[in-house]
Image (cartoon, rainbow, N blue to C red; front, side, top):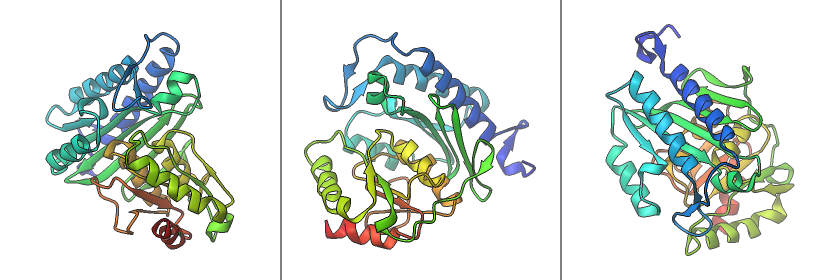
Length: 278
């Protein structure tokens, strides 16, 4: 990385993000089965463990040693629930440099020993994501994207899939923790979309679902009521792999987006229409 915009003291933003994600991922994996009973967060389906907090602390400290003046938005630093999440982005979204971190995306999977969880780290410059890293410690897979420079997994350039329409698509979604509004909306959409696609997966980590769209393993992903830390890294990844990320009304992705639609681009209009019809 020769351009000075992305290097301070010889250590690039991307290298720091990769280092943080892999260290946190290793630590999380080493703690499997060692934690106490999880305390409850926003709802009974939204488990949080000391592992989330420990992972975030590790990342926050590492970032601060390299970039003490940068802002930091982590899931654990924000009160549970959609309002607090929206406020935190409104407050911090304009920071010059803002690190946006989900220390364990897929905590419920982690607690149950289901090996589909990840660490998601994004860096935004004046509200625009410029670096995105998602690390899956179970498979030791590192997904990396840099704005304008492409996205990679195992060092190979990622490319979204080539399915031309919904009928050939493998989509993913999630089951939101908010059972009052987000979950019923998402279930209604799932019911409407399921007959129109090849199949649907719901593996419990929005960040990894986004990485899989970028890698061409999924044709698309949608969900209701997500947060910046679920989406920021993955959104850049998909864009850098030739895909499209918008809100469910078709507006371009920004840090405040909560209802996401992401795809290989070829099925995007069809996906948006199916969501709207639902």
